[in-house]
Length: 315
Image (cartoon, rainbow, N blue to C red; front, side, top):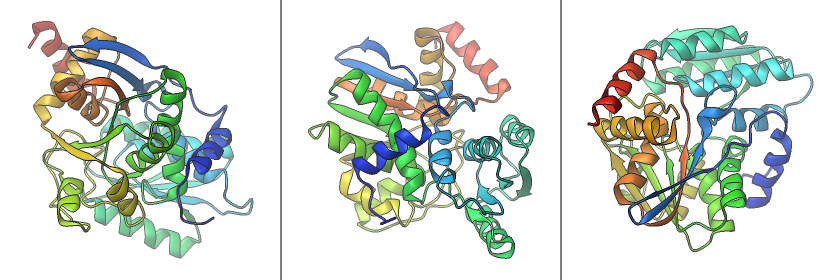
C-alpha cells in the first residue's frame, strides 16, 4: 500500500477493526471557556487505544505469516499480544526492564513471548528488528507505520462523527502514531480546527523537531508518562506531523497528576499519565469545543493510590 495516509485509509481501518475494539463514548464537560469532548480510550479491552492500530496492521498480514514481533514499553505490547490471540498469530514482544509490571503481566497472559531489555527505546527497537530478520517475523511497529497510524486515527474519526465539529484537537505524541492518524482525520473532518500535539516536558522531541525543521532526538526522558518516552519522531510520521500539527504543548509530571485527579473526581474514570497529557493541556489552555484523546488507563496501582489521595485532598 502506498505510504500516504488519507481519511479513506482511516475509514478502511475503521471497517477492519469493527467488532474487535470498543467505540468509546465521548464525555462532555464544560470547564471555563471550553467544552471538553473527551474520548476515554482506557475503556478499550486492553485499557488503551493501541488495539486499534495493532488489529488494523495484523489483519492485513498474509495467512502464512509465521509470527509477529513488536517492541513496546507497555500498551502496544498488550495490543499486539491481544491482536495475536484474536487472529491466531504467534507473537514475541520486546519490553524494557522498567515497563509497568501490570502491562508486562497482561502481555504474557495473552500468550506473547516477552523478552526484557534495558530502558532505552532504541535498544528494544533494535532487538525487535534483529528477531524479525532472524525468524522471518512481521514487525508490528508501535508508531512508525502508516497502517498503525490509520488504525489509531479511528479514535479522532469516531470522536468527530459522534460529537460534531471541534475547534481544537488535543492528542499526545511520542513517536507519532496516534497524533499522525488523529491529525489526518481531524484535518479532513474539521478542517478549521487547531491541531495541538502534547508531550511531556521531559520528552520534547516533536517540539524541538518542529522548531528545527528536522527530526531531533532527545536524551532518554525522565517522566512518569511511560508510554511517551520515544526519543525522536518516526521517519514516516514526522512529515505528517510537521505538515499537520499547528502547535505543540509541553506538560509537566505534576500537571499530569492533577489531570489524573480531575478525571477521577469529575469523570469517574482512571487515566494513566500518558493518557492524561492531552487532558492536562485542555484544562490549562482549552477554548471552544475541544476534542481530547485520552489514550489509556493502565495505571500502576501504587500511583493510583497516590492520585486518589491527591483527589481526596483537593490539591
